[in-house]
Image (cartoon, rainbow, N blue to C red; front, top):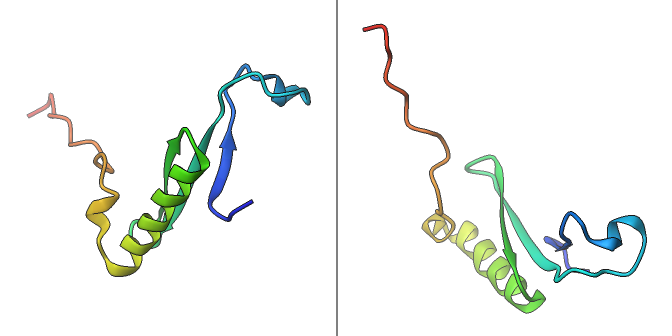
Length: 84
């Protein structure tokens, strides 16, 4: 199997108990961002879509185009203090 890809089964899938898969498992693609110090993951319905995203993501990280991967903020905004 390709590096950076894995099959993602549902929680109740029979494959987790060693039987034949009975879910519609998707494919998870991931890359590691050294700049952010974290793994960036996305799930896709097909292996081809996961491979394509991973190739784009790796290229984006190498070229410094990280806006490709920006999806949600890394940290929550600070909460207002009640004791001010």
